[in-house]
Image (cartoon, rainbow, N blue to C red):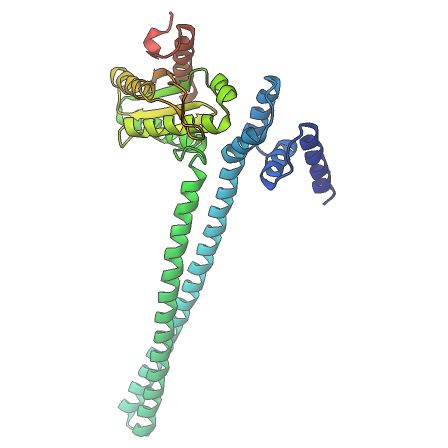
Amino acid sequence: MQQTQQYGAETLRAMEERSIEPTPENYAVWYSFVTGTNAELRKQVEIMASNDQEFDKFRNQSLFEEYVLPDLAAGAIASAGDDLDNIVYRLNSTVGEAGESAEKYGAALAQASDSLGAGGADVQAIVGSLMAETKAMQERNAALQAELMESTSEIDALREKLEDSKREAETDGLTGIANRKCFDRSLDEISTAAQASGETMCLLMVDIDFFKKFNDTFGHATGDQVLKLVARTLTDCVRDEDVAARYGGEEFSVILPGADLDKAWEIGERIRTQVGDKKIIKRSTNEDLGTITLSVGVGRYRPGEPTADLMKRADEALYLCKEQGRNRVLTEENLPG
């Protein structure tokens, strides 16, 4: 309790030092930062602080959606899983009771059969006993059927709740596409499958050119509009088997199973062209803000290598785009050496 209170006081102090509004979402972000329970969040905050970025409500909201919300959703999944376990336990208990009843009924029938065969028992009493046992069995079966129907309905509702929670945990709150957690999981799964099958796989790292300047000039609301536009374009341009994700900030990633470098470059170029063809209109004033451009780096997976190596080459190709003037797509084959 004392430790929790200490963390709470440190959290409020950290927020006060940065003039952060004490909302529940902001408190969750900075409590996680102070306690160090989320290493990725702590690292991101330290990077932002080293770049003298202001922790305004938009950046705090982004931190909450990217780093805190997925953990909350994971908690909901765990809770739903516990509920499902309870229902299964209850079902097992009911079925077990029905099994015991069936055994008792079988024993009663066997005893009745022996008595009838012996010929020394009162037949009327035996029949009455069988009828009573039959009625009791019918009542128990009816109760079991009702319990099964109710539990089936509850399980269906919980399955739906679990699916919703899983989707929420792996979806970026702003753009509606996959988030970093989903990207990391998908990259591991797809690279493992590629290694097993021998198929190719490529990765796009996509960055919005001069996004910080655009954000500062036209405001965060318009910046969010741009992020959503890029996300929609990614979704429109990629194939059904591809995974498009918001990697963080203004950076996106696309995993391309089965694609070689030429195909990956083609998809990256299609994304870049379609984004560049769209005009940005400020919704509040209907002002034409022009267009935005993308830089795209492409890497190809080499079976057996750590996925970090693949990401490093795609990132290096992306930074080479920046060095050469931005608004282009380059692959790892364009890297020097």
